[in-house]
Length: 128
Image (tube, rainbow, N blue to C red; front, top):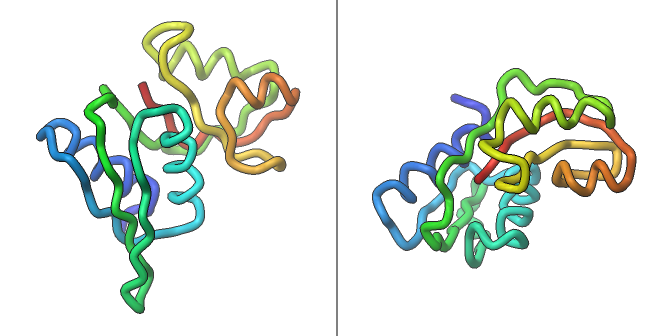
């Protein structure tokens, strides 16, 4: 099986391209949940509902049709606070469009929050 984050973001992207209203992401994990919450706070997706099926669980995600591209970054590059801009240029189409998602010692945050906190981490995904 693939990485759960890769699976989740591919599922979202496929359903967005087909103009679906919602999608089911399985298996659920803490990392996928944190990334989805960042998407939700930025307005890319709507409600997130956790469904406990007695196994790993699932997420039901409401889609708005606002995502042009979202992908997980493989391999997960380690980045210092001064090197964030390099990955911003590599993965995002323009300066103020989209977000990079980083896993840092302070939790899963966006690249803008990482710059404010002067912290580095690993690049997990991007969305715009």
